[in-house]
Image 1 (cartoon, one colour):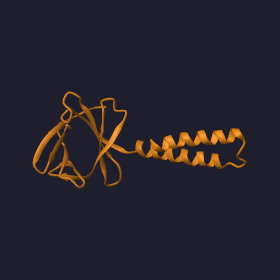
Image 2 (cartoon, one colour):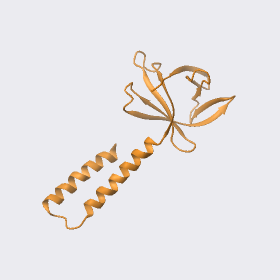
Image 3 (cartoon, rainbow, N blue to C red):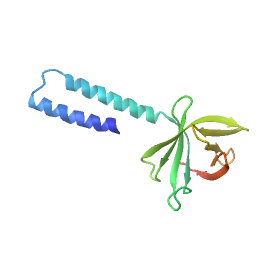
Image 4 (cartoon, rainbow, N blue to C red):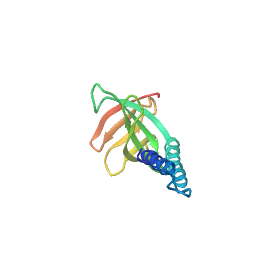
Length: 142
């Protein structure tokens, strides 16, 4: 988002300079192109992240359910994102690693004791920590 705002500001500044005739070379055009390519690459990277699945729960906020999704960020890192029910704005949450434990796909939060297990039968997401079971997020078909 910061890059998009920077791009819009840069376009405005360059347009103003170009309209005044204070620029004789194409510096602004090159800068606009470079920033635009960076924003495009950032958007492409996010859209190419593989989504593992979506879940819904009001456990953390009773009466106001939230959407959760797990997406693959890199070859070995997954991320748990959280959003309102609109699903328009996602906040990046815990970074996790994936392992199979007793045949269940399990995501362990890096630097914490929390984990998420995908139930093979229902697709629900079981949440726990080193003390045991916490809650279950229901599978959500988006």
